[in-house]
Amino acid sequence: SNLTLENDPGTKVHGHANASLYVYKSSLQVNGTVDDPVVFLQDRMEDYLLYSADSSAGQWRGIYFNAAKNSYINHTEIKNAVIGVQIDTFTLNQTVELNKIKINNSLYANILTQGANISATNCLFGNSNNYSGLISIGGSSHFEHCTFANYHGSYRSTAAFVFKDYYQSINDQLIY
Image 1 (tube, rainbow, N blue to C red):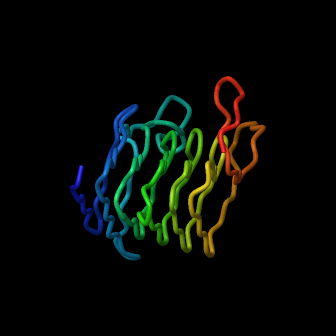
Image 2 (spheres, rainbow, N blue to C red):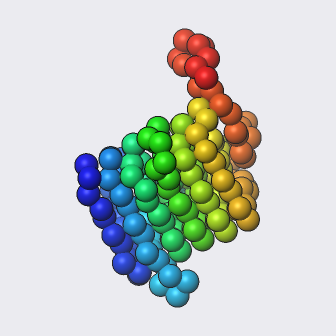
Image 3 (cartoon, one colour):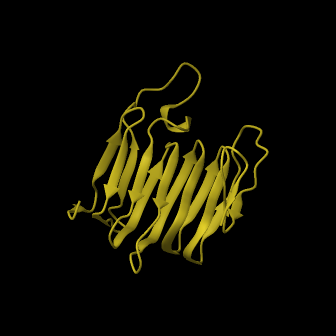
């Protein structure tokens, strides 16, 4: 905790199966540019039998913020994760800012928040097996000029975007 991880323009971060970039009580600063974006993706780069490696969702866990300090991600692509970006239970006045990022081809959700503070500008949350966006348990959410589109190739029974101020436990208890 209490550390800062900076990613310079052009950085590529590869995650192995079930790997996550876990940001706990710390700050993540991703400094991609238009000409030199930062990319987070799987480490398996060879094609599968019938599918390209880039078309298979859920190859790594994703970026997980837990009680993180102020953080930002600029000009970045996050792909083929289980959950592209997950932000949980922020303390007061701590925010994750997303600016001009693309999160695509996630197995569960491109972005999932639980009681978090988030500000997203000019972002694309596209093609998830379930949710392009799942915002729950309150917090402060600001989305400006963002696209939530879900054209995932398989059948899904979930909404592209869900916004709710409660959590439903395994026992069907509603927690507001």
